[in-house]
Amino acid sequence: MLKQLWTAILDLIYPPKCPVCHKVIGVYGQWCAKCLTSVLLTREINMFIHKLVNLDTCYAVCDYEAGLKGLLHDMKFRQKAEYARHLRWLLYKGLEMRRYKFDCDLVIPVPLHQARLEERGYNQTALLFKEWAALKGFLWGEDILIREKATQPQWQLKLAERRQNIKGAFKVTRPEKIAGKRILLVDDIFTSGTTMDECAKVLKKAGAAEVVGLVLASGAQ
Ligand SMILES: [Zn+2]
Image (cartoon, rainbow, N blue to C red; front, side):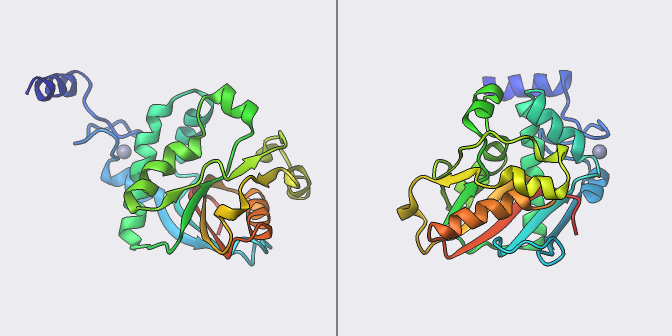
């Protein structure tokens, strides 16, 4: 009772707002209908165009350019983990609307290097997908794939440099956990796909039967 009253008071002082246009909306973490329509672009990315050979396929929920760029950047670099709530809602909404079902045994996030994880305090991909994976009843394998090499951020590099930069960056710590398994590899953004493809290569080498990708945002076809 007290909690409900407190929530009602808070709603009056700080009403829930759309993270893009700041229009007042019904519930914290949601988006207004107009911004939601412009940002959701749930689709399968064409692996052939991107010349990716290890990742079996990849799904993206949103368009990266349509209002998401700033939010993802804030969540990553400005310690604004509370934005994750708005981003998680997009994930639920997009997958629900397209009725995507994933047949997987285990969900693995693209890992950060230990130094970056300590600096940031959280893996933004875990913040986005861990709750969803639990809700779907999927196992969450965060420590199975690790990033051994501290790589340069991929967005600073050209395509050929990206492949070189990410090569040999990942390692499977417990191959017995993924042998013969269907893996859903998750990340926040898909740009050229080189990072996810390198992860898929390492996972398959360690015995994974299938590696399908799922990302929150992408500007790719
Ligand atoms: Zn809006």
